[in-house]
Length: 156
Ligand code: FES
Ligand code: FES
Figure 1 (cartoon, rainbow, N blue to C red):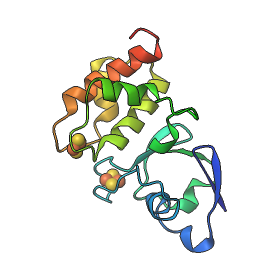
Figure 2: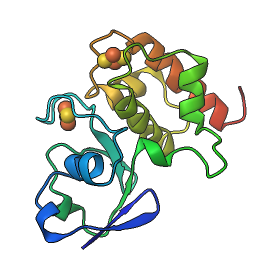
Figure 3: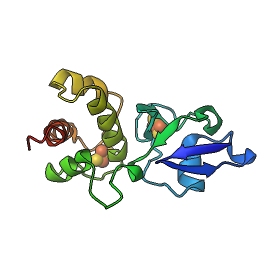
Figure 4: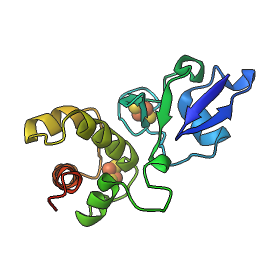
């Protein structure tokens, strides 16, 4: 089988196919931006996009992804190195502290803003409720989401 990750196809040999998508990304494809947190579907650190939807990668067998498109934090910036608006907003708002949860927070935000380009506070909290941050950056994450939404609308 192949996996389509960040618009690139990677051959996945049989002995990798029953590993989790997270393990394949990190250990076999060298895409270590997606983090291993709890390994139990509870923290959101391993969030990637699968056909545009935010999903945990720590419990999902690579085999189950099939032909769906996977996006990770490494695929967000443009080919010219230009940051994605969510990444730019995170820098502008100085969101991260230790940074461990932030790839997952950013990917969940990308999915949210594709569905709702101007989310209110309640919608942001709902969309990111499963992405935990032990450093307490939730206030700055909310500000980052609002700024990213404004950047995408050309209003920042
Ligand atoms: S590492 Fe996947 S939800 Fe925590
Ligand atoms: S920034 Fe440290 S866990 Fe979120």
